Image 1 (cartoon, rainbow, N blue to C red):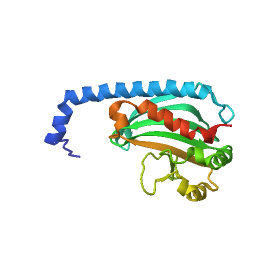
Image 2 (spheres, rainbow, N blue to C red):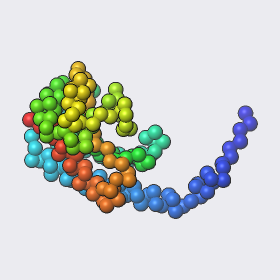
Image 3 (cartoon, rainbow, N blue to C red):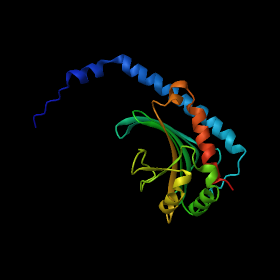
Image 4 (cartoon, one colour):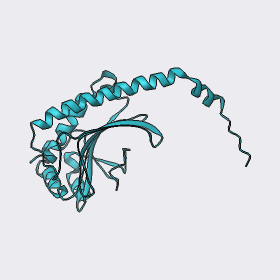
Length: 206
């Protein structure tokens, strides 16, 4: 089999651009620092809360992940708090997805989902209108946003949110922060992540 492996002029220029890769590495370090700071803020926050968590939940468990291929784009995230089993999922993920956005999301699945749903609607006024949205994908692992993918959690959409959540065995509530949002430029991502978590707390507290 005679195969030629050629690169375009643009590809060769990128491949040889040491500056680009050094900048990428430096940005990755900054993102890790942001996620570490957010983890510490979240840790302090949940220390004063009574979480409605599944059996086996460890309040100290957390995971930092860095990868290159979330739909071909680099990403970094921290899961805290976190619990993943076959039957239960209870996690708050703070994800920085290069080329897309920053996402702060609660993911829940399992027997406690009915109680989380009751909490949401019993405390709806506390949760609504905080730039949160319900993710509509049939998978917890979809990270895009937009029409058909996300539904804003607002007072005016209460009945629509209720109908969407009816009979679901899992759901995800998220706050999406565009990369060009002033919070990213001014370095207040940690504060925005903490605010998103605090807005979601009524759903997962006793």
